Length: 190
Image 1 (spheres, one colour):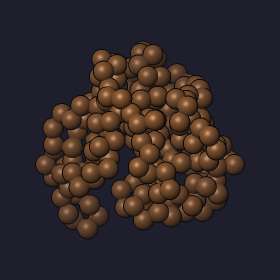
Image 2: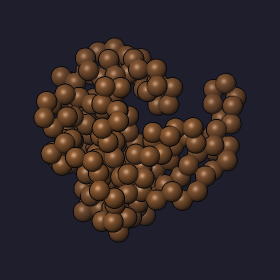
Image 3: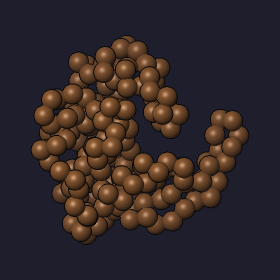
């Protein structure tokens, strides 16, 4: 399969909804990017509306280039922006993608990351992907739990997987999800 422009359909399980980012999300994105936990573990721009508008445009360009599905995670009831769900680094030859997410502080603990991953993975599997890869630092217990709750399998731990800007080696857990893993995923809280 060759890379082709990707559609970003609206997906929902009744609790979370995934939709394309829009310029109207810029104020909320800038606010989310101010969170120290998100800034510490993710490569996000400086928190400003202008940077957020640029980021939204780049997100749309990645979908147009066929290299990433990138959705806004929103609360299905209120429509409030809660975070980001991406399936990026899409490899159409080997039919795999890498899961990435961040969730704003006010929405953590509600299984938005796990729910959004299930929705995104089902979409990707329906469009030819056979594997979704995930990873998280070994000290990120919340990410570890959310990846397992989504149905991913812990496949191992990579020692000194990368080195921080401060020169500190970081270990990382590695996860994988195949269509059968998603089908057999544990029930989520309502």
